[in-house]
Image 1 (cartoon, rainbow, N blue to C red):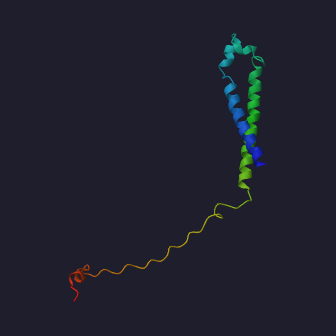
Image 2: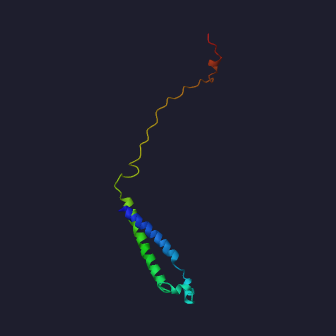
Image 3: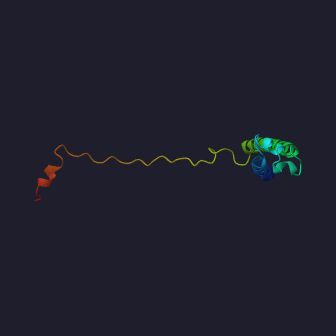
Length: 116
């Protein structure tokens, strides 16, 4: 189910991008009125704008719904619980014995003693 929603989501996203790039800006309508080549299109001068804008709106709604569906599906997974359930507990460090204390003379008395 989730794979199908992902595929639909990606297809709708790419389709919205393509349709937005195909549409003309608001200033392009004035050029069509004075004999630009867009008036001889498949849908007529204004028919293509209505068709493309309606199709873009429908695909934007599909994209919105698939986004919400993917959010719902990802938040309600029952497989393995949360991230903290999979965490490995940290072991406490082993106790280290303290180093022997250095004599107040810095250990110089033992260095100067000559063994007999």
